[in-house]
Image: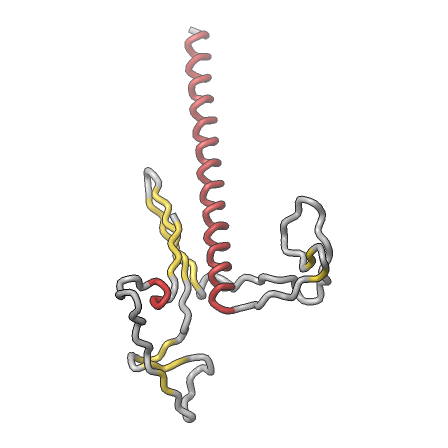
Length: 161
C-alpha cells in the first residue's frame, strides 16, 4: 500500500474543530549564512518548510519491502510542456498533457513546489512497484518452467523404464 506523508499542519486531525494549530515563530537574521529558503523556527532550523515523502510497503510471503521516496530520491515532476514545445491538439485517445484545449492553448501550469515533488515521488513509487511486479512475474514464470521441465523429465524416465 502507499502512504503519502504531508506536512503535519495538513494531516493533524486531533485538534478540536475551530482551533488552528499554533504557528511556529520565524526569525530572520541579515547576518545569516543559511540557504535563502531556509526558515528558522523557535525549535531550530527548518530545511524544508514543505516536507513531502511517499512510503511504499509491499508484503510478500517471503519478505516485506519498504521504500521511502522523498526529495533526496526523487525529482519534482514537470507538469506542463517542456520548454520550447508548442501546444498542439492531441490525437483521439491520447490523454497526455498537450497544452491545447478545444478552444485553443491552455495557460501553462505552475511548476515546482511541494505538489510537483509529491507527483514526482508518487511516479517514482509507481515505477518501483512496476519493477517489483515485473520481477515477481518473471520469477514465477521461471519457477513454473523449471517445474514443468522436471515433471517432463520424470515422465520420460518412467516411460523409458
